Amino acid sequence: MSKQLSLDHWWMPFTANSAFKASAHPRIIVRSKDIYCYTEDGRELIDGMCGLISAPCGHSRPEIAKAVGDQLGRMSYAMPFQNGHRLGFELAERLTHYAPEGLTRCFFTNSGSESIDSAMKIALAWHRKRGDGHRVRFVSRERAYHGVNFGGMSLGGIQANRDAFGVGLPGVVHMRHTWLEANRFSVGQPLDGKELADDLSRLCALVGGQNIAACFVEPVAGSTGVLVPPVGYLERLRAICDEHGILLVFDEVITGFGRLGENFGAQRLGVAPDMMTIAKGITNSSVPMGAVMVSEKIYAELTDAGKHKGVELFHGYTYSAHPVACAAALATLDIFDKEQLVQRSRTLEPGFQKAVHALGGLPVVTDVRGLGMMAGIDLSPSGAAGARGLDVIQKLYDAGVLVKFTGDTMLLGPALTIEPAMVDTLVSRIGDVLSGLAV
Ligand code: PLP
Image 1 (cartoon, rainbow, N blue to C red):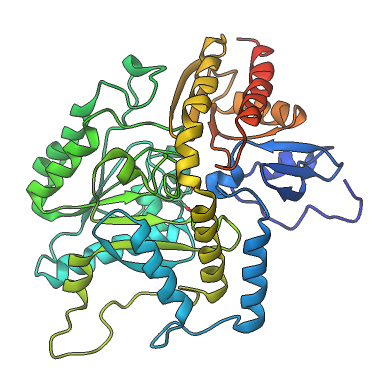
Image 2 (image 1 turned 90 degrees about the horizontal axis):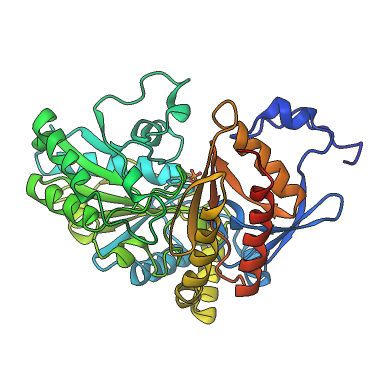
């Protein structure tokens, strides 16, 4: 650790700040390239998470760096209110071709959390425009992660993320999560549990389906530890939403951009949402950006101004469709096309899932789940919840691997550019560390 660098002043997000800053060897990354990150003392780590499952094309792509640099020189910013720029329109159009059919309109944000809050506001505004202003409730799920702003936090179902922050937004009700003991070590979509979707019917009976604006779900619940939906579950949610006039919103911040072997989870899982929130992979994590992809019907009805031609949605960010982020996103989509990364994800999936599931034989591993190029591995706790996770993060770092833990659950989601041999190296390093843990 170079002595000039003070760690005091950056209040780090989702980090055990005092432990990190007190460490004799704080984990500082100085450089990243492809599937690797490099530490200050010159060590090479395989990034098992491609950032936060957010850099599917691999780190520090020169094509994106060039597009960003050129754009900064040409037009570093343009006001997006009552003005536009070519890149925003170009990107929105390209995204609609990439998105599930029917999601024809794109509202830009700067993060996943902002996408979620924007989608909540669009849902409320649309119902109100249709004379359904009483639809002010939202349904979400236990163990959900929808970012950290007040809307997303209120939808969220991970207790630690809500605990310190009061009651959140009123009117949010939660379905059960989809983890079932009986489905432990399932490969792909578990067979049991589609009836868990009937929680939505029960909540409709409880609060009135006619009062619910939207139901938010991650097609595969990512941050909580990769909970893959049971066969038939999302289809059932779709049907119940239709029955009650509830919008179905897929939060595809993690599952988008090839993670599940199709452009988006909706396409992999064969269920069409009314809106979709995206972020992360949209710029390969190079520049912050997010978006809400919206169905034609919602856009058309919400922007049907009649005689009044004023602003239809009083919502937007200074940096909505930031030109530099747009340039990064267009360069990212070019890489996806050129390198056929979605198809590559599909090709990599069987080997990746086989390797990860083989860890299920280790005594410390209590469950393995996965779909596409993401997986969650539950470890038996050691002392307080999350203590095992913190310990293993450091052990893996020392062994040359970067991963993320949520509590005692390890998340994996490497870049889609990874070579099969490196999948094996990544998983065997993890296996070596896990084999050495006392149960
Ligand atoms: N939604 C999902 C499903 C996510 O996984 C995340 C982040 O991991 C978010 C929303 C929040 O995104 P951000 O951290 O960009 O605000």
